[in-house]
Length: 270
Length: 244
Image (cartoon, rainbow over all chains, first blue to last red; front, side):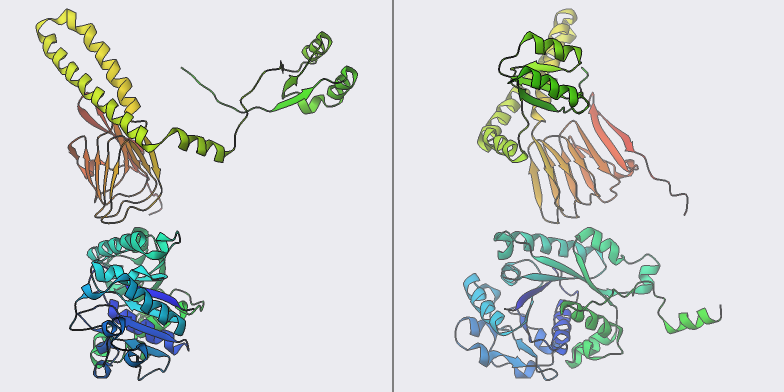
């Protein structure tokens, strides 16, 4: 029986879809069977970031409505055979989702895969509620800025109120990924430190991802940045995926900014 | 009124054989010298004088309140406090409170005209109001959950909150309010006092008056209403970090 992870953020544009793609691929590279499902009905993006847009034939809504079988709609990743992908519908609206349909789909996916990653839509409307309804855990993606944190806080509040697991008297584990950390700005006090964010949101830390120009290029090319072992963000996603797969990986301090080559050189002459 | 509350140990026993009883307390005196001895059944004068001389404090055939388990207490509490009952009582008290306040106002106006007659009446009504407001504020809630953005808490009575209030959350209380962690959301408190930590981002309205955040400069501040004036006093002073 697999584990269902919803990737949520509340605010749009903080890197939710990028995180889903990278974490999903990272898990698959760890040798675990993983499926990423795009729940952003009407605004499909995950297929592009995974580089699979031209392979989409059937989508999530068609599977839920019974127009297509799951096996037909699944798309295998070009990079890892452990990673499968289920696209969202670009033409339909998120109002087509119902709890029964979502539950049936997730139950079926849980049988087959060790990790089921759900990419939630931005906002907190019905589409979001259906994504979190049957999730076992949630990854909360935030940027180190106040608006993103407040929206994430709201999203967590809704998760704690509306998820099926909470209704059954259990607790949904929530893990924080702080995305786009700029060490210099944190040092100069212009950017929130991840410790402060953890204080506000009161959930566990899963990982910190530094700001990295390579991420945009990687997304545009459809090759998630986790494949690039030289990229800082890629390394961060590798660590995060490892932690999800149960490896004991220490938290790397990417906020002090002392890891730069020039800083190291300067230290030698001090 | 000064009160003290403490627990004490009680040794409950029965006198079957007087010689054995005396022998037992002779040998175990050190064990029982701080106990209260409760004797059930018959007791002769001989035993009574013996205990008095020892000396041991004792009671004869008295029923003592025996502590109950926490669960039993909670159940009793639930039984007595059906929510409906409580709300009704509270609202009727509030009505009475309003009436009394109106009466007080009328009396104060009258006071301007005829001072001597109204003075004693005013005092009487004032004491009644005070008693009632204490009763109203007895409805007490303790919470230890983080109040996240978008959540609105409406509390009838007092609230003690042991966790954060995040930006975008709202708390309304009719009674007193104590929050031990940082507040970034909005607070509306209509009680007699509230206690708040340094909270530069909070929006605080106390009895309809907006409280300036810059006045909350100490680690824990008490905001209270006295004679229609708002006072802010430090409860825990600001910490000075000498090292830095």
